[in-house]
Length: 129
Image 1: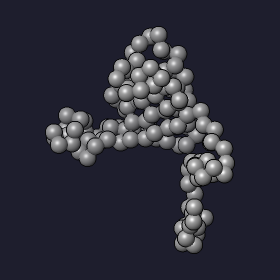
Image 2: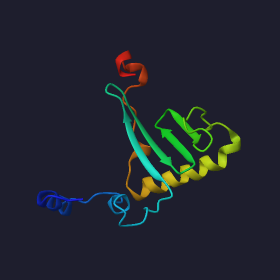
Image 3: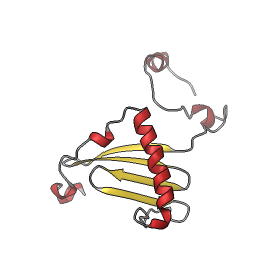
Image 4: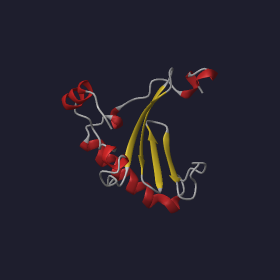
């Protein structure tokens, strides 16, 4: 993978949060070891609802400021159709993933728990949905 001098200079100046996949993708290194990933989302054009997500190989847990939670068993439900967040038989998984997310939020100074929604999905017109 060839890089321009300008690209190399830019990469040296910036600090990126994350792990480069380049060695793994080019066959020069092992697959990065990660137990989970975290995603952030803030909503659509006219409404803003802070969302955080933690995903493992088998599970996806999503939490919204003031709008509840989602939990999906990706090995059995890869299309994320059945939300298991309120299913008591999966409470331990939800707690574990919630704890991972809370640790990540703290370690990364993420203000998620203090954010407030600005509007709601009901505020968006039909073209935004």
